Length: 306
Image 1 (cartoon, rainbow, N blue to C red):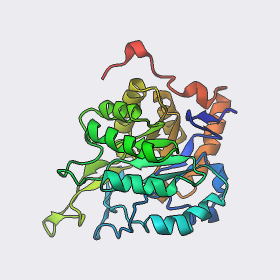
Image 2 (cartoon, helix red, strand yellow):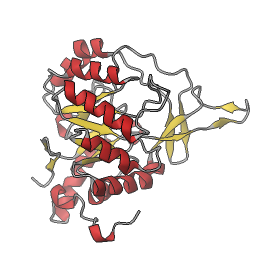
Image 3 (tube, rainbow, N blue to C red):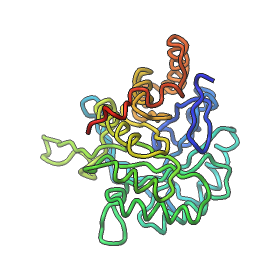
Image 4 (tube, rainbow, N blue to C red):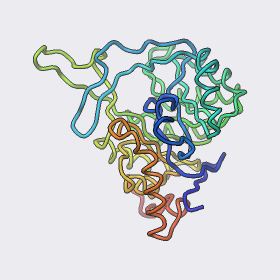
């Protein structure tokens, strides 16, 4: 009971889950630990058609983190529902399928293709940098966030978790738009836009020029945005960004997150996710408290400042 958490639309045995894109579909990890140890699994992004991703190099080390520009490489909806998803559902644990697209219609197509599966829900990745109309990036404007969430909601009854971009001036505007459009929860945050230069060749290091910065370097940003978003909406928040220690998990819970996602740190320590579950349980026992009691514990509405 100490580890259980409430996402509003579901209760999880614990608040620890992998971040999308950092766990594949879990096939490699099942050889290392029991996936049921986790509160839920979040899959790699699925688009309607297969995507080869960006040209290489598309990963680079950064101080206290890493840059990636994978480009949503995936096998596409048809292959996912034929192979990866049935395998993962056989493991009998809560599954959030991450959904990405280039147009509103593509998000709806993917969601409709997943609607009949017994999923915990869909995580809408609204960080794709292109749309059909005018090239305005998804996830960077409240209106476009509202539009895609509303369109998917109309075609799919599964709970929708909306993953927000931190590359905006005011993330709470996006959070409110997603909540008003029918989101069941929010994931805060995705990676921060960054780049590196190959000084010998005088060129960007990544073939895509820009990449997403993740890792401990972004934790303070993520924590602040979780705090802001949890203060602005009444739906649960899943914290993500730079988590590698049990103390990080506790901080995100106290800032207002009901669960957390762990990403790039699991690349260097594949057993990090189950270790965090065990260490969180020990921390809760030592402090005689529960996840539910910690959610938002550091928040005092009369003391919130931007």
